[in-house]
Every structure is written in C-alpha cells, then in structure tokens.
Amino acid sequence: VLEVIEASAKIAVAETRSKAIGVIGTPATINSNAYARAIHLLDRDAKVFSQACPLFVPHVEEGWFDHPATRLVAEEYLKPVMAEHIDTLVLGCTHYPLLKPLFQDIVGPLVRLIDSAEAMAEIAGDLINRENLGNESHLPPDYLFCVSDVPYRFQTIGERFLGRTLPRVEMVRL
Image 1: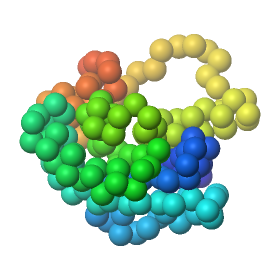
Image 2: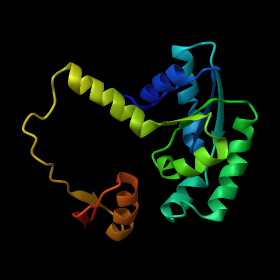
Image 3: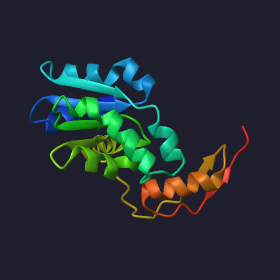
C-alpha cells in the first residue's frame, strides 16, 4: 500500500532547505493534521505551517484556473504560510495541481511546490522499477473513465489535468 501523504512528506522533507514547510489542503485534510504528523516523523525539527483552503476546489471545478477571483482567493490563503518564510509548499489536494502555475506565480520561484500526485507517481515508479513490475509489452493502454456526473465536465477538467484527450468517458448510474 502506497500512501500519498507519506510520499508528499518524504519529498517535502528532502526538498526543503530551511525546514519551513507549508501545507495547503481542504479543511478536512488540514484538520486531520496528517501532513504535519508525516513530516515530523521524517524530521522532527521541521516547522509545518498548514492552511485550509476550502474555496480552491469549487474554483477548479468551475474551470477558473486563471480567473481573477481565484488569484484573489489564492493570495489571501497563501499570505499566512508565506509570512512564515516557507521554502516548500505541499499541495495537499488532488484538485490543486491545476492551480500550480497560479500558486508558483504568487509564492515566487524560490518556493518548491510539492504536487501530491507527482510525489505518489515518483514513489510508485521507484517501486515498479525495484520490483521489476514494468509493462514490457509496450502496448498502449486503453483507458475508460466512468463517472457518476456530467461526463463532459469531467472530460474537460480531466484533459486539462492530464494534458491529453480522454476519448472514452461514460456516465454510470449508481
């Protein structure tokens, strides 16, 4: 079992130079304190500054990646963690990577953004290589995405998120 929080914490601890790490996430994620605990297990001297950001998910789901309202919200949410002089910021929600360019613009080039999905992919890739679990056939994958709500909306956001077309998106009834 691979844990996304531990994967992100591991990369954040490895990347930070000042041991000042910011974490942004949904209120539930931040209130769980899971990222702070995982980071402190790896480095008890790290300082973790967490910020709940409940408005990012609706903005992403509206497709407002570059919208002025999203920038204003991001500036407000990021102020407290930036005031702590962080050099690493963990994006603790699967929606947040779609706002990465905006976040990077706000926090500046000296702050490393830790994308939980990228962290997980890196850890999974290492495991696949170490255990010789790679697909040797080199056949292209055949993807089918099943959603319980508006396929077009999922397809639009999914294509932006993955950077490629999603030709097969089907709605299923639960």
